[in-house]
Amino acid sequence: MNRTTVLKIVLPFLVLLVGGAILAVLILSRQAPVKEIQEFAGVLVETVTVQHREHTVTVAATGTVQARQQSEIVAQVSGRVIMLADEFIAGGMFKKGDTLFQLEDIDYQLAIQRAEADLAAAELELAMVKGRARVARDEWQRLQVGRGDPNPLVLYEPQLRNAEGRVTAASAALKQAGINLQRTEVRAPFNCLVLSEGIDLGQYVRGGATVGTLLGTDTAEIVVPLPLDALPWLNIPRGGKGTAATVRFTAGAIHYDWPGTLVRTLGEVDPLGRMARVVVAVNDPYLLQQPATDERPPLAVGSFVDLELQGKILPAVSILARRALRDADTVWVVDAGSLLRIRPVQVLRRERESVLIGEGLQDGERVIVTALAGAADGLKVRVREEEVGP
Image 1 (cartoon, rainbow, N blue to C red):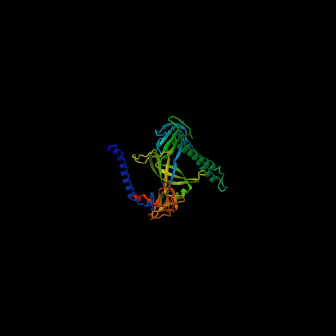
Image 2: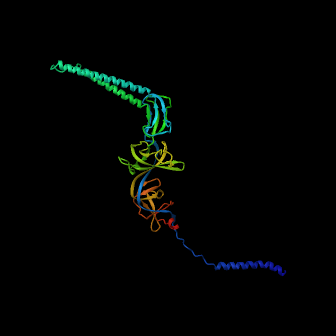
Image 3: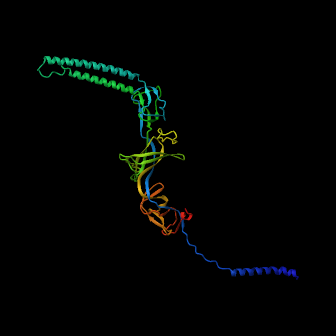
């Protein structure tokens, strides 16, 4: 066996032995790692700082807009329509006193002339009877002195009363004829919008027929159902000014607001829903008194709206997000040692997105708003605001 063959066989074994020796030296010379005890830093939470302040209670509600004034227009006399206002159509608007339509009045003018003639005849008859009565009394005084009271018929007293009654009736007939003539012209009783109409030019209208329906445009009303426990928080008017309100109409993603006022309660409770009903009034719902730059749409009758009623003022309460309130009216407070403490509180009112706390918290305390599974009194926490800084 030559030298080359021996090297090929022995050299790999030498390499393996040297490598094994180095590995053994490294293993025997290594140091054991130092064991470190990791301290629990606490559960990461978000908090809000308690601050007592004055707060105006708000009551959320919904309702449907309706007109405060609604009137059916009824023809009081009969006649043919000879004039019809261009705006007397559904959606048309009128100011108080504007003419809606006019009926043919020739018959009523003739009735006035007849009534004037009847009154003149009655007055003539009264004058003649008065003259006869004076003559009869003079004759009786001259011929029947000292023989008792005369017969009323002799002195024309019944005839005089009858003649006076005829004058009164004729005068009333003339007045009635004048009123009927005025009624041929129908005017708007208030600032209004035409909801519906049922006549046209040339049409004969009979007295007592309904010819249209008008809605008042000065004020709209919203009947608002409220739970009974909401009433103590509101200033229900009793001869004075009531609670202010914000009426919100939503069109797509855009909200339009109107100022309103709670003006009265209907004084009854719905027997089915056990809800009280109050009325909120909104002035100028059709924006007739607003500048042309006002981009709000009219607050039309039938619109469904949201309302926020401003109630009583609470002088010193703390306001927390609803998610900060836990079971059994408790909150989680972070103490000076960064430990969670379960604290019972006095809940004055639950609003749509917040709760009003009366007693149980002090200014400056931190209340946890993060939801924690299995939270217990004394749990260590770390506050997110303190970690990220101001």
